[in-house]
Image (tube, rainbow, N blue to C red):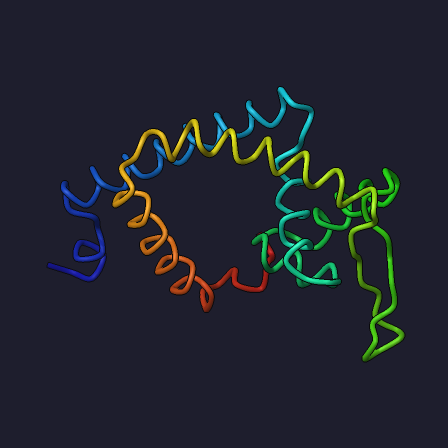
Length: 158
């Protein structure tokens, strides 16, 4: 068996992978639809979740955490600044470095959006799985995330 053949997925591996991909796309479709119905963008929500976990953060750090391009994140951030949800601030360690943080209005908007997120996740994930299965997801996706952090796109460029 040559290297190319040994790298191919077995039928069992392909079945698991296909179910994972189909399930992931189905879940993201439900999440996107739930967010859109409430007037919330999935990208906006992810940016806000990342920023909320810190006092302030740079665009490139948001992009890396989102596994997205800096230009994509910059557009989302610019719109959220226009909507008075985020504001630009100077870094305490390097005044040349610009960061973003939530405004007071942004914190209020985040609370509303977190309620929407929680309802969507509860309906499409938590109520579908047992507590043990849900905990397994945390462990499994933690391993995938940690194993991906050194991969070819770990720098957030697509």
